[in-house]
Amino acid sequence: MASRFVQRLTGALVIAVLAAIAVYLVDGRPDGAAVTLVGAVAAALAAMGLRERRPAVANPDVPDADLLVAEVLDAIREPVLLVRAGIVTCANAAARSLLGGHIVGEDVRVAIRHPAAADRLASPAALPDRPVELVGLGTREQRWEMHTGETSHGVRIVHLVDQTGNYAAERMRIDFVANASHELRTPLASILGFIETLSDEAGEDPGIRNRFLKVMFDEARRMQRLVEDLISLSRIEAEKYRLPGETVDLTELLEEVHGELLAAGGPRIGQAAITIGDDLPPVVGDRAQLSQLLHNLINNAMKYGKAGTPVNVTLALDRSGMVRFAVADEGEGIAPQHIPRLTERFYRVDAGRSRSVGGTGLGLAIVKHIAERHRGRLDIASKVGVGTTVAITLPPAEPVSSKGNAAVTQAVTGGN
Image (cartoon, rainbow, N blue to C red; front, side, top):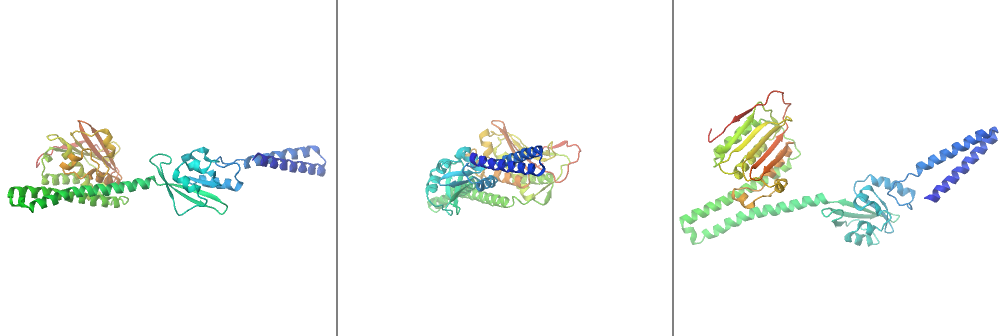
């Protein structure tokens, strides 16, 4: 680099001197020749100063053409390296961020430092059709695919593709299938076992037969609820990016849902206290999905709250003008470490208790996806020994007026 600079500087000075001599011969004035000489030298130095600006990603021994390539590669967000004779001659910004800024000029196997990558890069020829999986490169959780190619000039191209997100999605899919299979297999095994028992002498006793039939019915209903939730979750996910088109009055919908819960009965339905604000604006939504959301949250509070304690359901405007639906119970509460995972499919704080009260492990996952489809927000706050509050905020369908929002309390009990 230094020798090329000296050569260019010497050439520029020779041209400047010749230009000054030419000016002197033409007009015979030494001051004009001096001005020409100084101007020519300054222009040459300025031009060479601009040309000497080079990206820091390149090796000094790389030809000028590769310096332009380095600038182009810096615009690529995924790590890319150029390798000549086993040495990294160029690395874009993403590669330097992942592997370190020192990798230019290093042996590529030292730069990447992964056994699977070293085996591929040690081969004399690139194999572009066979990507190499690299686990733990960067961080322990990251997973990469290394693709290699080769130019006609013998420069090997190493391209790293981040597959961490795809791997996580695949892991979730596998876990989902495994959990769903387990949740279905457990009641199915119970049903088959009781059928086998009833086919023997135990089926002749009316008391035993009725007891077994009840267990079989309960297990079948549990399977039915799980299948319905799975279908519902799949449908909601399929519609996730399609905005709902209905205008829904949540006040009317909440009263309708409460009526359905009263009709269905239940030991705790009389402990629900519903508070609805005045003049609430409608929301744009899917009425069936919002009804399912209300059902899920109220049912959850009734299942996990302590017997004899109220379940407080409120529907009102928050300070930002959003419509806020909240359900609060006075149950055992949830430890902080569990709260971020509550919306995961089949995640349970207490699996035994959840199954005993008929939970499928999909209720909050469904609520989360419905809220996301409606461009809303799900918030969960809980304190151990005090209780849990789950809130959904949804944007109104039209601007909210500045009228007051005094809450009207409907103390709903029993069949009232």
